[in-house]
Length: 314
Image (cartoon, rainbow, N blue to C red; front, top):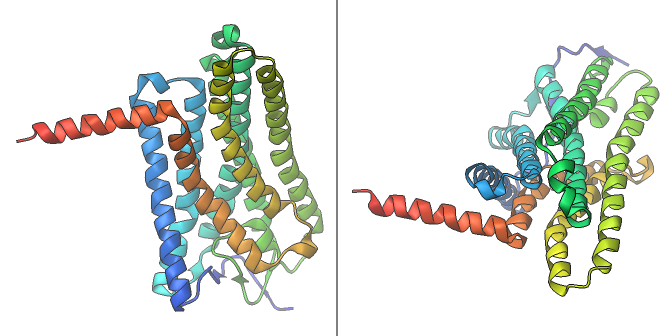
């Protein structure tokens, strides 16, 4: 087979075609992406400006929102530019950046979710020891560890994926670069790297989800032993929004990355990736704002301040 070196540009086939239906779907996806960016930016703003939200739980939530903003920014602008201009080319450097950021952010999100579940466990099961068990140095170490582990996974994938020789016709049947899609173009045996990548993916997903399930099992046991109905309602209210986000994130990620190869197809992967990288980031601030009285209160206060400033302007 004819080989090309990695200085040749790749071609992203994209998610949409130029039909009426796909133009409508493209508009919907862009609206979702803009809503995601605005919603997550607003969530970070509210957490920063409201002292009542300066707690470990909301600190981890702000990190989650930051990762979601970066995830959408990594995939959507390039996809939109390619669709609108018709230029589907992406350089190896641009492809490498996407390969790096997708696992860095996707893998990194697993660990703040696990940290948030531990935070809820301590708050419900050991409320008197909460200030000691969830101190700020521990929160910072957890956050730095999340970014480091995600970045290590992303760096490993980009270095190895771009080191393979590629065959002619460098077309990637996706709307962004990711290592599994790139390996399909390699003119070499990639089975060892694919196995290592699969193991890393399983560990990045299963270790945090085991911690999350353990935390919420202990929370459920503690809640069932509570005598106060109000205490039960409060405990369920503080945990239900987080569980909804965990279910959406892990449901999509496990279905994308842990399915057997025989059940995969390019079209399904693209649709699921759009859900995972665009739609889910929009749902996170929506779920937390609709189901969390503290966030709704902070939003009302912020809107009130904005209205007062506008009212007093000459």
